[in-house]
Image (cartoon, rainbow, N blue to C red):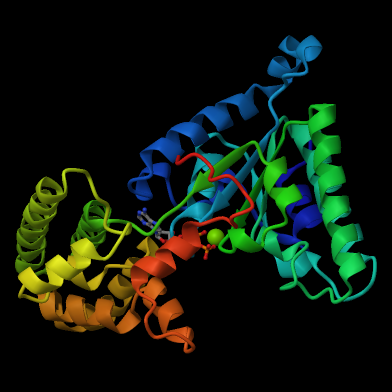
Length: 357
Ligand SMILES: Nc1ncnc2c1ncn2[C@@H]1O[C@H](COP(=O)(O)OP(=O)(O)OP(=O)(O)O)[C@@H](O)[C@H]1O
Ligand SMILES: [Mg+2]
């Protein structure tokens, strides 16, 4: 059995090690994403009793592979949700940053990948379960990596696949997570190695309403005054938007989503006259809303009251992730938040579209 300190010492150079007691967030702090949560809950339950399950399925070749790929735009909860589940199931997790693995020196990337997986596998065997989370997994084996020689990129991918296969084959209770914002650049062999593919999205109107309300409640809990008009206006705007969407759906004869096309956005721009928080935050991630709230707090702490104007201006100041990407893309100014969202969510056309989870 490895002690907490030993785990940190062994893996610290590859990334951040979180023991269950280090993790602040809980599963309920990441709102929405219900189906993904259900999958992750099943997954962690299996991880907890993996040794027995492997025994039970020994002669079937059906032992579950403990691999999950999380993909989608930045700030949508991929890392926090995984960390929160590790805490819930009392399993330590190491979040490995790609740039600590990928080295311009020939052979070093491969050595690093093998080391981090084998050290984690040892801990998993001894301590009954461990989670290894590869952030920006697309950097292994993509041209974004520091490796400049094509042959070396290929060898890094192959080595990664080999160690994953070995761990799966041996039935080690090591869960391997990969996360990426660049799923289009992810090597297809890596993509296929993961049993679960869970797609994260920018939050829609419903979820943004809940996220905004939850941050406002946290401010109230901290005993900082909050102008009632924030939640009143939020609810009014939400109801107004619901009616617009419903009418559009009746007209079209089918359900539509905020990010599918620009119809809803155009209609809302036309019909919702006031500056509302939901209209403003189209294309914002949960993390953008959190950042906006933090900015607002700098003001509210002095004035002892968070007003609608301060909150609105702070959210506007931080901007939404989808808009940032749009602005960076100077070549084409016709790209909309929805197009950006689609590109975040798409896979290359060579791959079948994964089921929505
Ligand atoms: N659905 C949500 N509900 C509440 N808060 C959220 C939600 N999504 C994101 N957040 C907030 O954003 C923070 C950052 O999210 P996180 O770092 O997990 O995103 P990520 O998808 O891993 O991003 P990246 O791809 O950049 O690594 C969370 O800790 C949380 O405070
Ligand atoms: Mg992350």
